[in-house]
Length: 188
Ligand code: ZN
Picture 1 (cartoon, rainbow, N blue to C red):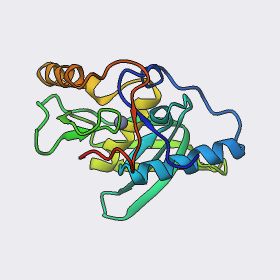
Picture 2 (tube, rainbow, N blue to C red):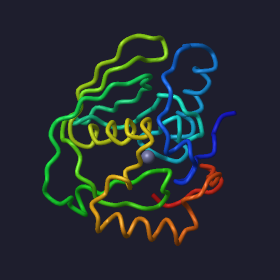
Picture 3 (spheres, helix red, strand yellow):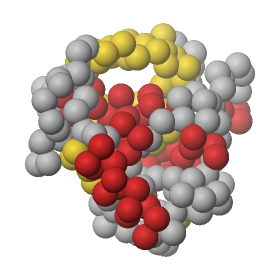
């Protein structure tokens, strides 16, 4: 099973806390491999296991860090520490975030500028990444997925209203809806 369907908001697994990974086995290796393929095909800069219907604490990412170096990896059973989040309103141009589980939409959201991610890779080796800027944002977005939180859940009230309207107009917000990267490609 290479590229997997990506679930859309409303599917219960997206709104539940994912479970810790307990076995670093071939099944996990296959899951992570499928997640990379699905993220690349979407295309996206990050993908969490619940987005493909698997309630486990795993995400993958592919983005450049604040120095412009390409960074790609998987993180299993992550812990995320974040810096303070500005109380200023989010900027529509600079802070607009998107999600493969709310496909084609973007809404502004304030995030911490700095984040420290720890966890394990597939070989069970400890990982520690200090991230800033958009790279830190990706970690916050993907980590939220493992706790059943979508970025639209965090929006300021006026944006949340717009997001909820779009979700209902699209007929989303109910179980089992998904799209398949490569077949149903959407903008954004
Ligand atoms: Zn997302």
